[in-house]
Length: 167
Image (cartoon, rainbow, N blue to C red; front, side, top):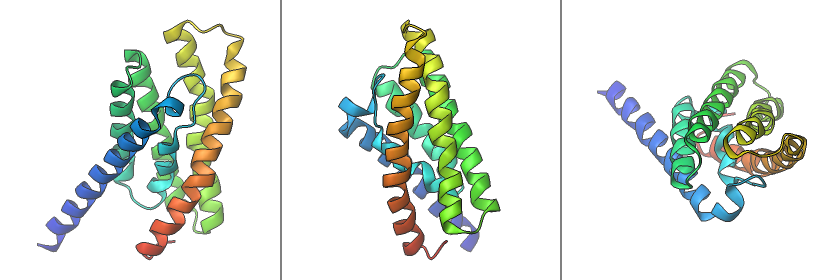
């Protein structure tokens, strides 16, 4: 009976994380989509450090957010796969590194760097952006992702880790 309860809790937590990602993306839609974006929902990208179920939750949340905001189909698929890859790598960091500061710092690198360097490639292909704009988009995404993942995500991590007695 206890094992079934644990599975139910994990499924519920994953649903909540997905829903939070989608709602946060929609509420902040004017700044959460497009070539210049600060996707505040990316603050949740640190959650795989605490919960393995956050990996599929972030993937689903990102996919639905991209679908709802009418991204190109290839952008929906590849952008969501970038989030999935970053989440898997962040989960690995959470299992390997015990120091809280180092865990957040290293774990946050994956969503920041993968999104910043790979999303502009997709945008150039999907939306016909001029290639030289790539470096500008990388810089803007580095700034936006750093703000979301580190400034906001660190607070999210510390609050949730305290609540669940995790480090």
